[in-house]
Amino acid sequence: MSTVQNIQQSSDRFIINSASSVVYPLLSILHLVWIIPLFVLFPAFFIIILTAPRQQILNCTRIEPIQVKCRVQEKTIIQTNEEPPIQLTGAEVIQQEGSGDDGIYTTYQIQLYSKTKKQDFGYVKDTKEDEAELKTIVNQINLFVANPNQRILQVNQQSQRWVEMAPAFVFLSLWEVPVIFVIIFFIIWPIFFDLLGETWDFDTKLSKLTITKLYPFQRKTEEEYSLLGQISLQIGINCQLYLLLDSKKQLISNLLHGVQVEEAYKGENFFCGSPKFAFQVAVQIQQLLNLNKKSEKLTLRQSKYEIWNFDRNQHKLTVTKFSLPEESEYFLLGQVSLQISNSEKDSDGDTTYELHLILDSGKKLTLYSSYSKATAEEWRDVITEFLKLNN
Image (cartoon, rainbow, N blue to C red; front, side):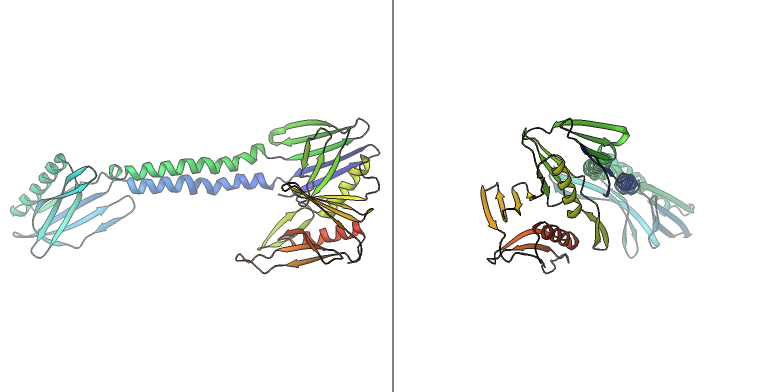
């Protein structure tokens, strides 16, 4: 999601405002257009198709006094299938036994006979009441075959598909409902709670920082922090600002993230932070707050556990790793350079770009690693200019 910055500055004020693009909330709403059919209408239609009643119809016509021609049709809500005709000679109820988790069970089905073959008619039933119903149908068929005066016969049998598919219906419901709620939650959440705008207002006259955040539907929050005491400012490698207050409170801002650098990636455009812009803003804030008047120091936050402190006055780099804990010092004297290397494409076809700081001793330190070549190049230019290197 791209952002738009607006900076205002005076002798005792520095205000930076970031307004989020409205594209993301609009896309979230548009996503509902296909999510509702995909996760609501389609499963509902699928369940209706599975559980809708089916009907088999036996249509018989007497061609001669002793010759009967019959066809079996099956009708559903979407189609009708028809079996080849047979020369009917009779019918009976077939009884079969099976076993399952509930023990031995018996099923019943009508079977039609011709001179050359057998053919099932209707659906498998499993109760004594069903057996009696099937025997009534069989009696109708056999009476028709034996009565030369009856010209036409039509009998039908309807399935209790919704009963048969009840377990599947329950399973789909248990799977579908939570998925729908989770997806809609993650789409609706940004629409109502996503940060639309953020303002950091540094006021040295009152020695305070006011952070104002604007959310959808004109909801706004405002927090004030004292700028007295020991304060330090760090730049995140992804262009966030980290302001560490005397109270040990750490404020993180993404005001500078998502601007200025745009490049093609897998056929799409994506935005990442601009190191040059982040560095310029950090210098302005430091000078305003008297944190680093001569801009001789630059603190980069690689991660939650690793800080790089450049001091060009002392020609020194201090790398602090809090997870170990460990602190290493490197002197930036002699032949020091910054170089970008790229790895071979991985299985997804992506290339990783790494920015290395190469010391006079030949030691190589990895400063930045990402899929963005443009950001790696911009970090190289920022560090080169700050350290006054001749790359």
